[in-house]
Amino acid sequence: MRTFAALALASLLGATACMAAGTSPDIAAIVADPARPESDRQLDASRHPADLLALLDLKPGQTVADIWPGDYWDRLFADAVGPTGTVYAAHLADADEAEKHTTPPAGSMPIPEHPNVVVAVTRANSFSLPAKADVIWFRQNYHDLYDKFMGPADVPAFNKAVYNALKPGGRFVIIDHSAARGSKLEATEKLHRIDEDVVKADMAAAGFKLVAESDALRNPEDPRTQIVFAPAIRGKTDQFVLVFERP
Image 1: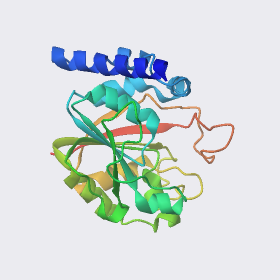
Image 2: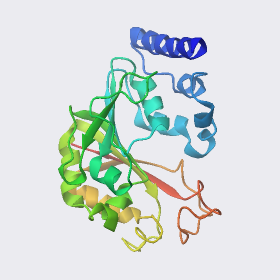
Image 3: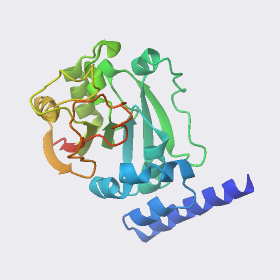
Image 4: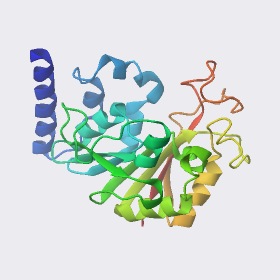
């Protein structure tokens, strides 16, 4: 417990010092922070956190929402926005119900060493946040909105609600497993993949502007014909990273 407390305090002091200096967070220092769990570090090689944090260009005091959240990224976001920023772990209650996961209470703090990570509970067809966000992050689950277990969801309504949950100039970041170009929605149920052109068209219809892309998670050796859970490709799928902006 003493070691945990010391590491947590060191992480908080580092974030506070960054804030006091009025500078952007040191991404290399965030990724190299010894307070990060070893289980997170083991995922770094496949998740490329430094590249993606640089793409997001988060600033101290900003608000980030992580839809279908995960502690790995929420810990990194919490350090990047610092103690004056907020990270909403945004649970879609309908997704939790379908997957038989317990939805934590709204307003709870699921990561004790990062009290600026706060649970928000919402639903796909009526998405909302407690406050407007600078960045909304949706990793590897956008395709699920089209699947039967989600209803399927009213995707246009969801996207417009995300648009409204962002500040003007705010960004919606979508990462997902890439399906073959031209396959549209054929692979969402069978392979848990989606054609990125569908995502781009969905976002344009909601009023978003595509402002950036990243090849950090690309794998040209992925044939995009296997389910993403297949042992041969799991953790190595070709993934697109798209950044959309609310004008």
